[in-house]
Image (cartoon, rainbow, N blue to C red; front, side, top):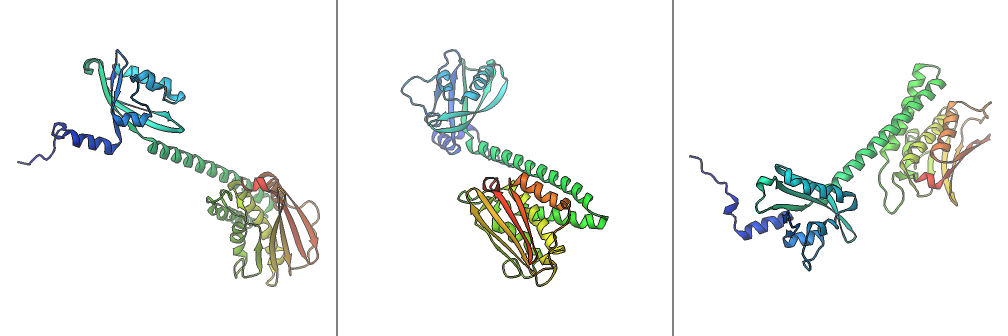
Length: 334
């Protein structure tokens, strides 16, 4: 015969039962349905932030419930007399400056109420509720990011198709642009001390320009020296597009198209504006293009105006192209 090692509640001593309840953070309560008198153990008084100086009623305890949950909780407790079996309801209470989440659990039905009293427990579930809220916030943020990236990808596909003369050229340009977005997305991480919520300005430039420099962004022909500023998610994706377009043009027509060419990226802060200078030297002779420019140029202006609240100016010097980016500092951190 198999020996039964289980035991009933009657096998617990009062001290053992009390210790188990305290370890679980459980508060016991008893509610007299007719008189509205409410009894709790000492942990219950601590949990709700009330004293034993005056008789406790459910109505008095209800004053501690968050106003947004109060009517719902009162209705739920009143309805428990008609509920057969166990029930549970979660709600917020206000204790001083803090908001706590409480789970009230018990067993209802008129037939099971002894002497018109109901009993149950209060459990502090603030940690679980905060974790659930964080998960929901993260899920919403991820959904927002994915939708934004899909919208940008759709726009890039349309623009690239118009400016490409072959499927192969479109594939190469679109792949490069999407890869640039992916690299910027990899940089999106929290920064300390209020520096922004995505990446550092210098990190974005060096990471995105590194593929164009065999020796690395700092050691080779590409040099980056910009202010230490945090860049937000929206600005980071827009800035990645701008950098990629400028780098692609430099590789095809400018300083990066020859081994001797160099690129210097520098920056300064003037009031609420961040000024970035993109300076190419040592490449082929610079020729100012005729007309307003192609779709790449339109993409630059749209992105700067839409994502970064900025503008750009070209200096078509024979010695090398100089591009000046003027970016709204407030938009840069968004």
